[in-house]
Image (cartoon, rainbow, N blue to C red; front, side, top):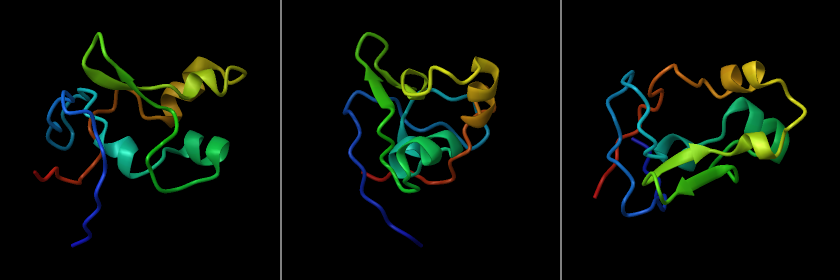
Length: 94
């Protein structure tokens, strides 16, 4: 079992079950980077520099769009797996 320590906002929602709808917990992006972030930031491990905490929503959101404005939105959404559901098998500890 691999163990990693990541820093997430204390008000972030709990991680949803694998395959459930994304709720913005931020764990996946704190651990690793998506294909777009790997290209833009040249890093595989997280935290992703594009991970944004949205205070008004009390959740994390992907901010890669502000770094890659030239990329068509449909491709961006596909490459960050938007709408696919939680694809992070990691579990949060206390």
